[in-house]
Length: 299
Image 1 (cartoon, rainbow, N blue to C red):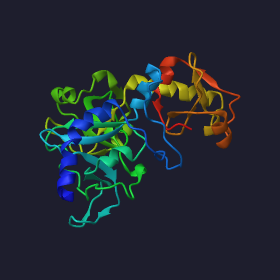
Image 2: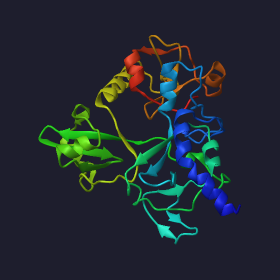
Image 3: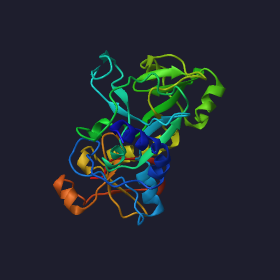
């Protein structure tokens, strides 16, 4: 059997394997999202409590398959100039799509994988780079691991709702468009005219809008709970990141609230000492407040 036929045979099974990957994640080595060395423990294990498993699965890495196609694509952050078997191109988005042509990709990093099926043409606007035929030289910090967080905003003076992402705003033209993407009006927050005007305006979101990146709209209720925790820490003079320690009323685990307002579980006393974290003064918060805070990498 030729090498090409072997690759084709392996790829033919990727779609079926995608289901098992999402349900039974693999355990392999990885680098933390912040670039530090060590393993990122994101794999759900049989001994996890339901809450532990849910928290870990929220950190799933996402790869994509379009309806009607067997090709699976990984989204990778890349330099502005792309070279390879395709023509050299320059782009500003900072990421490319690469077809996964080896099953080894799914055992190269310590991660849960979700193969997300999207409509045909969903990935057309993302520049294409060389396929992934082996895992040599792959940097786990370059691959997309979670959706980009966006907000739904409006002002008191206008009923128009905008999708706010990365310092830019896109007006949502019709209510039907709003519901098409599964967004809810209860998650729309009111901001000042000044804050809205500071956002660079881009094209409107309409029925056939295809996003070049996976997005996740933040729930306003969760954001308010997170803000409440942040304000409480500030009132207690917890300005130093190493002092922003929290735990819930019914959970013995201790977390550090980082500058990105993510909670990072402190695995052990040894880890705390290594990072210069003093565990003597911990702020207790409610279970709801803890659940509302996005989870970051374990310390």
